[in-house]
Length: 264
Image 1 (cartoon, rainbow, N blue to C red):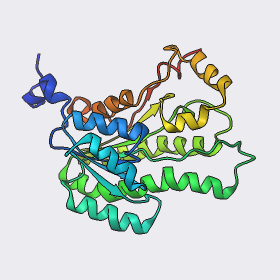
Image 2 (image 1 turned 90 degrees about the vertical axis):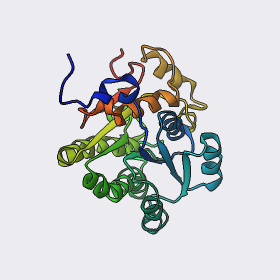
Image 3 (image 1 turned 135 degrees about the vertical axis):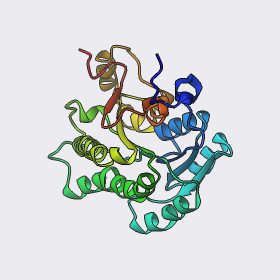
């Protein structure tokens, strides 16, 4: 039986998962998970704005992605860049209907070893910059009555993982941000969700695991699927959460982890 409140096009498989007509802004979009998500968004029909600090990396990514992509060189932690290059790109592009707060930095230190300045730097990138970017696009989304905001959280927000105190703190902050934003904006047609990736092949994973075979074995030993993920497995999840198929989903934190968060 078809729900008469659902537009007929949404009942068709191709339309339910399509992002035709959408524009996605992805921070840290030139490499790793960001690029994997960009690939999937473009394949689903969206236009993508890739934000990062390295023009060469972004331009190379756009060459691979094609005409549906645009590079935006900006440091998301710099207010001048946010008010300048980023604000200009948002103002001159088709309206941004999907924001992916993906950019991040890693710090492998215990709590005792982490200085206040180091903690602040990690929070500036993950938390304060994500909030600032969300504030840039949210008014337009609410005015149009349509939008999806995604945060890239982490297993470190769900599990106690030693030696990454600052990173865990920042990724855990996303849980509160997602729930508060979802509750505030649902009435305006904006959905807010997070993905908590497991251990996904990326430059950041290599930075964490290279020269640490014992840690790699420990991770795989507690992952029921017994492998690391790949970026497009996060990308298709992001497409789903941003698509009409997920139109009744907001405020969730979805682990995509091969079972690591429930494994023993």
